[in-house]
Image (cartoon, rainbow, N blue to C red; front, top):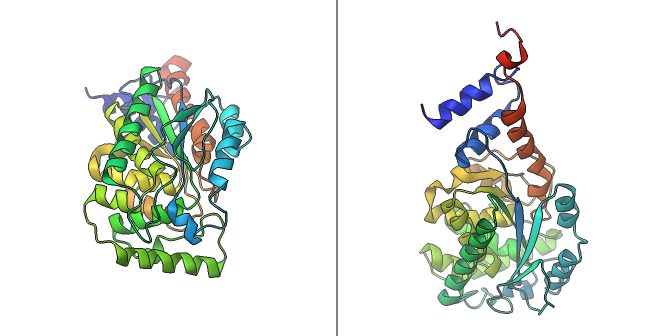
Length: 333
């Protein structure tokens, strides 16, 4: 008797009409399969926020200056960002990864120094990173997830912070999905129409500068250190059979590359939400994913993960604690 059949039978025996808990039942089944248990339990759920600066930000693809990346990292470390609030609310561990911020930070117990460089190069002129830097970022992502796993974590999600990173994500989405560039480029931090047109024009020009086709070449040319690090993190989390929580547009772009390397990775992924950043819904459709929430978020940081996490808790609790018809003495027919 295989585990999927056993889990579905267990779900169907609960004191409710068949399918009455809707998508929560599908979620319970998926979690049981990921964690390979009829009685799955979440251990030390953790969100890793990967932060890095982008050279393309110097060309005006964001409504905010590049200095905001470092300022927001300090905000994370001081506990003042939205993700800090939501992580505290739901008892989620939070680690901030300096993947390549253009600043130095004082030691902090919640900060992981994995700095590749002080930001990427501007891909409007030259590849964002060297192949060696890209490989180093991937390896750091692998090592950081392994460390969390060794500490007892079996549920992990990735957030990001990096002024200009929606430009990188749009380029990666376009090149991996083959969707038109305009369908991939959005307003990011809140560009007006004129600024959005400028962003699209810049990215179109960047496409003409580079001719790359191999996945890791594309990542090195147009990606960011935080995106490359998330690719490695996704791959390791999948290998370790962890429950992977997916956040917004930029983290989905990283997952796109990870899926290209490991096609079965989506089995381990729970998609927290669909955001309002242009391109996110199309990217979710490309994955054939059903996000749990639609709150029109476009913040990043892993905020969608933290907000959707209680649904995962509810799915596990009903699977493990809800009475069966037999236990409750309730007639099924």
